[in-house]
Length: 311
Ligand SMILES: Nc1ncnc2c1ncn2[C@@H]1O[C@H](COP(=O)(O)OP(=O)(O)OP(=O)(O)O)[C@@H](O)[C@H]1O
Image (cartoon, rainbow, N blue to C red; front, side, top):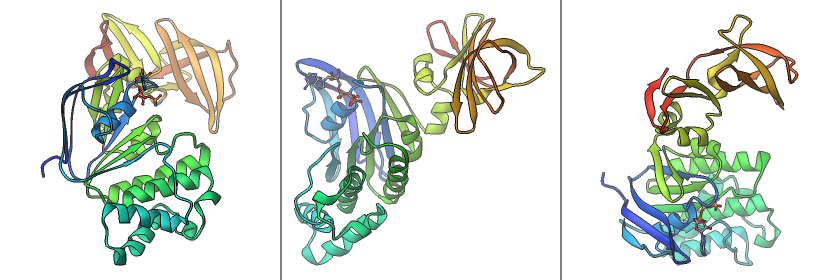
């Protein structure tokens, strides 16, 4: 089926300067794309332009069908939760008889049916977010755009909202683009992850493929490749999953940092050719000697281009 959203050579300006450059993006029906990138990368600006709120400085955006946007902090009317979702449906043009059922379905998808009769003023921050997402989902748009729907939430509230949103978006038949800050959110939500840095798309692919073989060293570091070993003509970058402590490991090193985690510790280890990070369940102190084995990682040349794929 052809794309519902087609972006070609798109640049967008903010305050007179271009902050999004030459983006090509095509999103198919049923596809969920996460836009991921550091602060100031241009994610929200790009999303605004996709939604028609910000003008394009160059290039084009073609939207096939109707677009709904869930903003970071939209207001809710001083009505009940269900009335808020029904208002969105009325505005969207859904005839009155179908509104209540559709509103309740969307609230159920977002685990918020129990809030239906509650006044919007009596919602917690996390509950408000659920209602915002439910409003967007209830409209069943051809293109749904969400700007950091989980910003500012932490711990369990964040996690359960991500899980419910993930299910709701996977049930949607339209195209979805969601801006996220946290890589774990991108993996949880999306079929495809687009990484934006300094306004440019620097990676685009299924989450598993991107993580297994980031196209550049810059993307690898952003995706959690926090260990490095110098090798001839470049370096091998590793994630903690590639490195393990082993009594007869091939590399000798010294622990330079120990950070406690739920399941043990995260160790930073200096070795002859670099510094590696790994997880372990043992008791470690800074200065301890340790032996490591490296199984995996991705090799980059001195320019940061991927060389040989996985090792
Ligand atoms: N109104 C504005 N005037 C001038 N520059 C702006 C304006 N809004 C944003 N910018 C700049 O545009 C760039 C992109 O901002 P944008 O908010 O799109 O990034 P982002 O990736 O969504 O960031 P964050 O993750 O922090 O929300 C940043 O350098 C920002 O400082």
